[in-house]
Image (tube, rainbow, N blue to C red; front, side):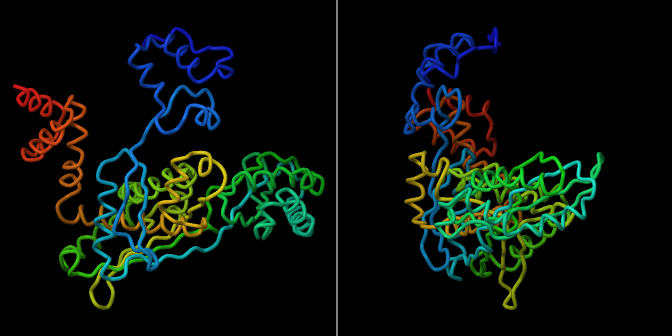
Length: 422
């Protein structure tokens, strides 16, 4: 640890390169580290500097392409940004195995988001609740005036809900503004509307507005995907029954469900990230939705149809957009959207749901047959070889030998690399 101070006045006023040299000086970074961070790849430093604060470099994440997907009758190539091996391959394999049954069918419940305004110090909260509801027309006008562009594109205010919650410090009145955000993720729009409405709510109720913020539990914006895997394409009834047993375990046990749903998000988050959308918002909404029954459960449902085939469904909140944020400012995100060929946030969310379902199928099948480690470690072996110092053709040679031995570890890779080099 070489840091002598974390107090660097005026760091935000420096250029990215100046910041880098300042941080390198304090942290004791050598010339190689500085040169590495100065190379920002296909995201130029000026663009990165406009996206977040105190930029000194970029972190490049591999961008892969998932193949074999048919979504609503259309062939789709799906960009996925992830650091985890086997994720892209899993989607490719799962999608290939349901092509004979038509691939994935998807739907979307709508593009509604919720902004919440919290009012405290309301002496008669139930009376205040009704009074707020009486002002629906005024609230609608205020919201639509706040974002006339959204209104011009067919979006805007849609509904008003008011709840009374019993808190430890007294009752609080929670106002929900339900807004159609169309092709935007919608955070900025609904947050601005909450800010605009808050003073009026305070005047009508005598309460004090505190939080004025969107909810990432986007349960009015659900993406749905379903698919059928024929027994002949997945290896027979024993594989199907193993998948059903694995699903039932996840649906009953939160400890299993956490890893089960993480597997779904391996695919979902990779597409969300590749398209410049908010991975944290999508993940928070997904996990909150998985716990809506009072117990954390599986986001997917797996069943057997009348012919004995395996059927899977996924329903989850997916608040993603095509405009705003990194979806437009990040050049790679724009290209990823071009590869996908989507023209609406609705279509993007539906494609992402198909990827999540494919990812879950692949994980469950691996668990029910060979075990998750065999396929995963075969792909992970290349990472281990690189960690050991292998380069070029050495990477594949060392990886293959580790897999053959059934021992994928850095110390094994180092030993094999030393032997390979004589």
